[in-house]
Image 1 (cartoon, rainbow, N blue to C red):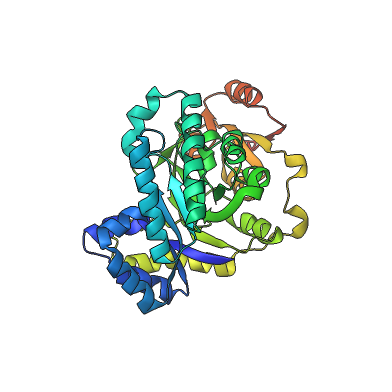
Image 2 (cartoon, helix red, strand yellow; image 1 turned 90 degrees about the vertical axis):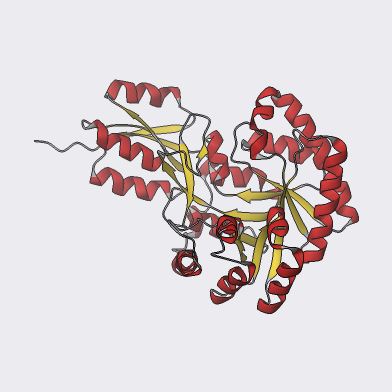
Length: 372
């Protein structure tokens, strides 16, 4: 499996003059990365000539071109033209994959007016068009599970609906985006692995603020973070991919460093990913698959140090989820719930009632109260 640096988080740094395409390619080269995933808006910002020059100078290849094309809200003529232009760009960059994001963040109000059935019909229609055009250009078209619950591309059943109806469409498997619909990353992979042609290795942590955060269907917020610092079992997912014979590229879903994104700050940040990759613990082969595809849910009664120690371990398995939590000190329970994506409750009864309502498979209760 080959790693590829996803460059779009550095767009703001390019605009502010702190980074440029040469520095990005130099950054990749310094940590022994030979591929980047680049977005169409970066071509417009930087210029194709400069990008190709930097790729040649640093011996970097483009693994995948990513383009926003408004399948859900645009008109057919403009959509077809955008597909054509981006296929030409993909060929010029030497990549054989074009990942299409079928909406723009500017389209949210328009998306709210469409029914799910209308959205699915447009996705099928225009991805079919894109795949047909892609075949003529020898470019594989793919779509990722999308971190927006207004777009029917985060649930297993919704992704399967599209992929089964558009023959030849590939899936760019993002390891975290399905959290917006409360889906499990490993179960998501197991159900859709036959369609996967590209991977985005993304870890996330739950946060309180809205800045640069994705919102889940039940109101929680999460944000990208370096591997190993969040709730996604990156190491286990990598081992599963390898065990299943995946040999393609995996994009490093890069988290921008706090503060000014200078070359040095980005160098330190990308090192976190590379160091994790080198030192990550391997998963025992006998634990690579979920038993019967089931997710174990937990209600935590108590949120102290022992609770955190056990939570850290079970979340990283990818087959466990903390559903609800209660603690005598509510401020402590709020912090615990935020960290692990659970719901906090002021009473045991409320925590257990929520726990029962969310029942899917096997649920357990842990009690972590010390005696006085």
